[in-house]
Structures are given as structure tokens and as C-alpha cells.
Length: 255
Image (cartoon, rainbow, N blue to C red):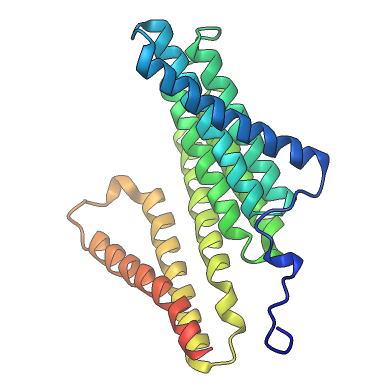
């Protein structure tokens, strides 16, 4: 702001491609969305609903959703790691779905959908971890290891045992907890003592929930679902959620 006039800076731009590759992805996403919409609308109006039509409509839907995700990532997140991870995951799933849809491959649909969930959760946790840029690589590495093991179990890349599954569950719980703390870590630098106290209380609650879940993974066969343990876990988890919602608001109010 200068003498009552608003000066627009580069940071205010919604999206400005910095390379030819980014421009190429942007135009590909836009064209895919437009073609998906046109093809879908045309088949609904003039097409006959048979097996081929359903495949074409499903293909346009898959490509359109994938293109919108890539467009969203490029327009909102400038970090190369976040963008690359999401775009690779999205492109891989679009290709696999299309190959299976047209019966070029015969992959299990349940495994495909489970892969979508694993990659989506992994990228979301990576995005949450990015709130603390200083520890981003360490947190993301744990997310990547966890996602790799889950994909290995889904597609039978590796043999598994009861102990191995528990190990993966523990890594996943810790990964989620670190991403959660990373998301709230901006409140740690507040100058207000009340915000600092609230931050450490929430971190303490997250730690308690994590430890209780790890204990549960090791002792799931020895704990009754009517046990007091689950009541305590639910109580602490609800306080954790409430504190996580309250902390950013408190920081806005108190500074």
C-alpha cells in the first residue's frame, strides 16, 4: 500500500507458471477437463447406454478428476516436492484405472481403490507436514515409508506377518501424529504465553493418543471393546481434536 493506492505484488498472483513443463501440465489439465465435459454431455444427450458408452463416460470422469487435481495442485502449491508427489500419484492412478477399465490389464478393483486411499492419505499427510518446513523432509520420509509398506501389502509385493502389520500400523500412527503436530507448529512461535501453553497442552494430548494407540496395537487381543481403556482413549482424542481446532483461533485472537 502506497499513499492510499494498492500496489499488486507477484505474491498476489493466483498462479503463474515458472517453466514450460508447468505450462504444459496446465494446458493438458484444462484441455482434459473441457474434453471430458463435452464428451460426457454428448453421450448423455445422443449416446446409447451400453458397455462401451459406460467405459467412455468413466474414462472422461477419471481423466477429468485427475486433471482437476493436477490443476488444483499447480495453482495452489508452488513447492516442487508437494506438486511432484501429487502429480505422479494422480497420473499413475489415472493410467491404472483407464487400463483396467478397458480391460488391457486385469488388476483387482479393490486393490486399485485401496491404492487410491493410500496415496491420497500419504499426500495429505505430506501436505500437513509441510507446515513445518524445517522438519518436512524427515516427516515426509516417514510418510513415504508407511505408504510404501501399505502398497506392498495391497499388491502382495512382500510377505507379511502379524508383527510386520503391527510395525506398519505403528509407523502410520506416528507419521500421522507428526503431521498433526507440524500443522499446529506455527502456534509455537506465538509471543502470547496463553497460546504457548495451549500449544504444549495439545502436543501432550497428541502424544498421549499416539502412545495409547501404539499400546493398543501391541495388545489388541487382550483388551475388551467394553474396557475402560477405550473410554479414556476417546476422551483424550476428543480433547485433542477440540484443542487442535481451538489453537489456531486462539492464536488469531491473542496473536
